[in-house]
Every structure is written in C-alpha cells, then in structure tokens.
Length: 114
Length: 113
Image (cartoon, rainbow over all chains, first blue to last red; front, top):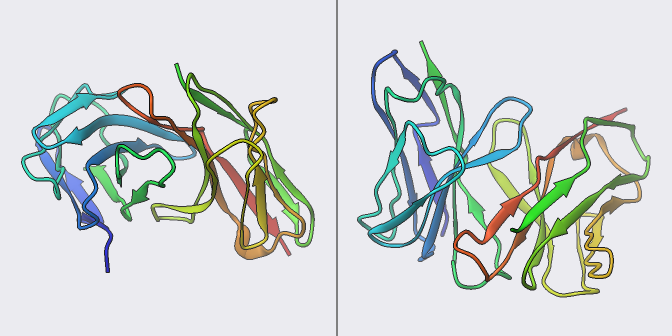
C-alpha cells in the first residue's frame, strides 16, 4: 500500500544532542513538508521541498535542518540550537503541481527532551 | 499572501447535535479547499475536499460548500457522534506561490454522550 511513514513514533533527546526524524513516502510525490504541532496548537511549517536537492525554509526553520537527496525521503534533524524541541512532528507529501490533490500525512513523531 | 482563518475552539456538543465549524480563506489564485481530521496521537487524514466554486465536498455525514463570493468553506454535520471527537483543520492548496499548502489553526471538537 502506498503511504508515508515516519519513524520513530516516540523519540527522547538529551539536551545538547542532535536527533534525526525519518520520513519516507512511496507515493511518488514531488513535494514534502515538515510541520511542528505543540499541544492544543495548529501546524507550523518548518521546511518544505518541491523537488529533489532543493528545499525552502518555512515559518520556524531556526534550529532545524533537512535534506532531500532522494525523492522518497525527507529527513528532519533537530539540532541543539533548537531551544524548545519538545513537540509532535508531522511529515506530509503532495503531488506538488496539482493543487486539487490532497496532502498525505505520516503518523507523527513525538519528540521529548529529557 | 494566502491564508486560512478558522473558528477557534474548543467546541463541545452533545451527541446528535448540529455542528458548524467556520472557515474563511484568502488566496491570490483559485485554490482547492480541504477539511482534515486529526484523532489523538495521529497524523491528519483527509475528510473532504472541493476544487472549484460551488462544489460541495461530503464524507461520513460531513459537508462543506466552496463559496467564492464569501471566501468560505464551513464544515457542517447534522448529527454528531462521540466518535467524531477530534481536531478539524481547514486547508487550502493553491498553484501560485512557492509554498502552496496552508492550514488553519485547527478546532477541537468534543462530543459528549
């Protein structure tokens, strides 16, 4: 079945560590997105990519980095520069060029700083 | 730029009550409009969509009509169930601009028996 997979589901990070969240899709989608969701809050865009080897900062990119070396994969690294990383992280993908098609979401990764 | 403004919650209803969640949008082009639903601890799932003016999207008893004249896409359901308790997001997708996916802030719905 086609879909988008995030791993791990739960992640614990010590202060000062970098951690990488995985996002893989087999939908042949061009565009991929990373969002952060805090308790009771909406989605805030961290980074997005519309094509391999290209990505753009979203509204809250500071303290995060991404890569897009393959069409299927869009990993997010939460660096030690991110001062408040505890949140629920969601990855999404779309076809990119067709606005009438919906976004597909992964199940999310809950990151906690310990 | 493009944006979505969504009714703030939380919304608490009794089972079988009528639901309306308001959503208005601003867009420079001709967007497609969506409602997504998020159950606790999960990602978002598409609930319904409409791709042009006057289209009505519907699914699982929920409906929303794309109103270009009022730039709105309000979500309605005639009789809610406890299982409808979730967070609902209004969204638009537009061909113009570098980032063509915009979400509202979400509305938490709780349905009590």
